Amino acid sequence: MDSSDPNFFTTPDPAIVQPSRNGQAPPLHPDQCPPRGSETPFQMDWDQQMKISESAQFNDQVENRGLLESSTKLKPQEAQNYRKKALWISWTSIIVTLVLAVAAFTVSVMRHSASSFGFAFDAVLDVLSSAIVLWRYSNAAAVHSAHREYMACVILGVIFLISALCIVGKAIHDLATKLLPEVDDFLYSVSVLSGILCSILAAVKFMLGKVLTSRALITDGFNSLVGGVMGFSILLSAEVYKHNSSVWYLDGSVGILIGFTILAYGVKLLMDMVPRVRQTRHYEMFE
Image 1: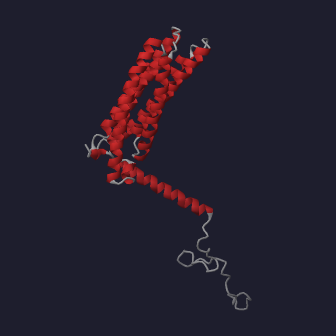
Image 2: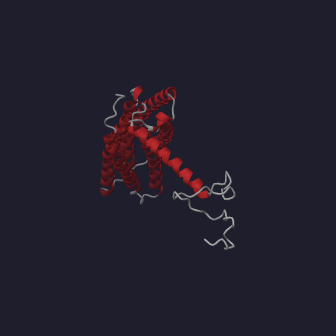
């Protein structure tokens, strides 16, 4: 190099990154380093995504060990307290819906109501689903058992399919034969009572199912909610028919709609739970 060059003794600009001999970039000049706490929005979003990803991986690891997410959220004493509440609400649901099922079947036969028949079948389904929840939480040591939970859901899915087919078949038959419903005070009483009681049971089951992360309890709550809707729908269709007899098909149409709703939920439940039963079949340590 020529020492006569005016840039020969010039100090290098610190803003220009000079590569080192070992191929690695030298550390930045202090003036070039960003101040602490000045993270860019991209970096903050990336950190949030990483936290969400780590949380999802942790939940997957918990599930892969045969446990529900509730095992990481509830203390042992809290879990047992909620388990007892689930048993209590299940017994209450069995007694209430069994009485309502008998009353609804009576209304269906005496008043030729497709909605009453649909509600009666749904009430029987509610009795069976509550009995399955009883089995699900009968073992205190299995309160967090994923395999037991998924088995209960599969049984509930099968019951949903059978119930839905019966409800839709009965409603289609009544529409085909143009069966006209009859309206009286007994029908009103059963409808109002069914709608109120089933709605209360559904709310309690949803709350407990969310705390225990139990799909079986939530499914049982959904069934109770459907029963409440059907109870009020009987009242609605009966009132409409009372004022306009030309809308005789409303009762059967409601029965078909509710039947297909139960059918769709049952299919979705089986599609979600059958693979999980297979994945957790080796984790039966709680039995």
